Amino acid sequence: MQNTAGAKSAQFMINLFFLLLSAAIVIPLLLVISISISEENSLITEGYRLIPSHINFSAYEMILKSPGQLLHAYGVTILVTVVGSIAGLLLTSMVAYSISRADYSYRRATTLYVFFTMLFSGGLVPFYILVTQYLGLKDSIWALIIPYLINPFYVLIMKGFMEKLPGEIYESAKMDGASEYRIFFKIVLPLSTPALATVGLFISFAYWNDWWLGLLFIDDQKLVPLQLLLYRIMNTIDYLSNNLDRVNVQVDMTQFPKLSARMAMAVLAAGPMMFVFPFFQRYFVSGLTVGSVKG
Image 1 (cartoon, rainbow, N blue to C red):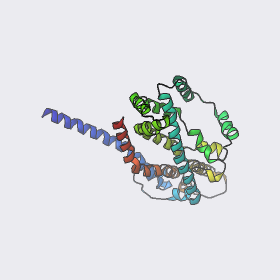
Image 2 (cartoon, rainbow, N blue to C red):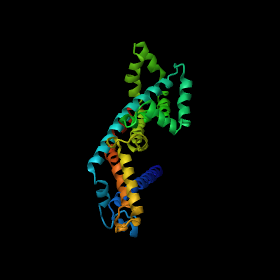
Image 3 (tube, one colour):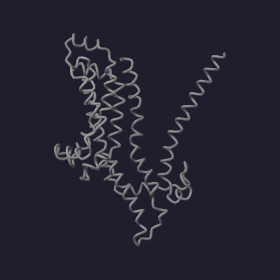
Image 4 (cartoon, rainbow, N blue to C red):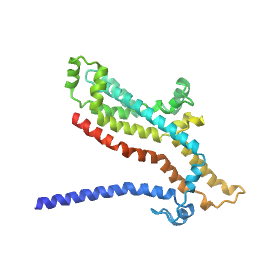
């Protein structure tokens, strides 16, 4: 009886902990949505509220004045995210597979090289010259994809997982006449599902949230990604709100959606990923489980 009571108490504490943790995650998201549909005047006078006292969609109306441009930016970002995630995951796993093999002669040197690039970079100016002049990717969709294809940290994560795979698998496959390509694609990748799922998720979020590459290399308005477009809109709103008092324009500043516009852009930027992820979550969890059992 004491063990049963203790187990129930422990389970209650665990449930309470995760309930509080869930609330700590969900409440800020709800607050962001609430602020995005709040009237600017109520935000200034009453502060942030979980339930808005006056609902107003002026922030979304301002951002969506050019819906075609916003939808095009969504398309660019989706394309970059999908292509970059698939290509990046493939290249990352290839490099990790090479340096995880004990029979690779230059394993230590290659691992050191990968680790060194994680600690030191070539600098912004050489990076810009490399992409624009040597690779010729100025105003190219590939300028948003290629620079992030391989991340040394993700390579090391994949390497650490692949090193734990039994060496007998490779020996058995070679005895059956399997080539390195067949071993990699038919054996290693299916067994590395947990690492692939985790790293793939990280890569996808990195591409989706990036605006820096667009700011550096994209001048063509047809190639502007979503995050860069929202960044420019926010800068425009800040500039107008800070300089309206310097011109002879009579505008009620309390009705100018500056605060709510920030949250509206956060919703527009993060909303699609938050909406899509639950549909893929079961595949993500299933991949982790299957990969763990196989490994």
